[in-house]
Length: 332
Image (cartoon, rainbow, N blue to C red; front, side, top):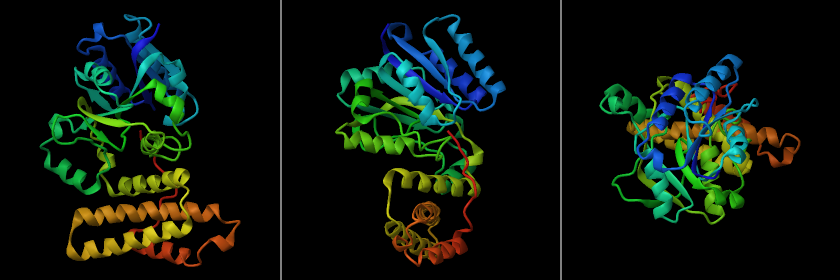
C-alpha cells in the first residue's frame, strides 16, 4: 500500500514528549481522508527506554494496524536513524518531526495540502514558542540572549520561497532524494552534534531543488531550560563549528580569518554594550575556534599547510571566552 504521507520521527527516548506527539498525530483533523503512516525510528541508547518507546508505538498500532511502524536503530545518530527509516516508509511525501514538538490539529492536512497546491520540493513549517511561554519574560530574555532553541516563524500567512531548513518540522517529495541522496550520517545529533538540516538544505538548493515556507504547518517546540545556559550556548556553537568543517572542508587560513573577525566584533560590541550582538559574536568565536581546532588536527601530517599563528590565536580566543569543552553534548 502506498501512503500519501509518511511521518518520520527519530527519538533518543524522550518518552513523555514522544507520547504527547503521537497523541497529537492520532487526533489530527481530516486524518480519515488522508492515507498516512507514522514511523518512529527508535535510537534510544538505553534498552529499557527503547523497550518503553516500542511499547508506546505498539499501543497506537493495536487500534490501527499498518499505520504505526516502529524501527529500532542501535547505532547512535539522528541522520543514521532517518536513513534507516526512509526505505521502510511508503509515502510519496516524507515529513520529519522532532520528538520534542507538539503538532496542532490541522498539521497533517495543511502539510499534505501544501504539496498539492505548490510545486516546491521541500516544505518548511513553523516552529513556535508554546502558548504558555509566549509571555514568560525570563524565558524570552534568555532566548533573546542565547538563541539555542530553534524556533522558526516569518511574519504574515503567505507561502514563500526560503533558502534554509530546520529539521524539527519539514517535509519533502520523496522523488527529491534521487537527486540529493539521504542525510549525511557524519553530522547531526548522535554524531557531530548538529547541522544535519542545514547541510541537507544546502544540498537541496545545490541540486536545483526549492524550499517553501508554509506558516500554517505549525508545531510548538518544548522549552528545555538546560539549553538556555552559558554551558549549552558554548557547546552548541562548538558542535556547529565541528559539524560545518566536516561538510564545508574550510581551509585553516579561512577559519583563522573568520575567528579574528569574530574576536574583533566581540570586543567592539562589548565596548558599546550591545548584548545581542556581543553574544552573536561570542557564539562565532566558539564556532570558529572549534573549527580551527579540528582543522589543525586534520593537517597534523602537513605542517607546511598550518599557519604558525594559529596556536596563538586559539590561546587568545581562550582568554576571551574560556577553553573549549572536551566532549560535545548531543541533543535532538
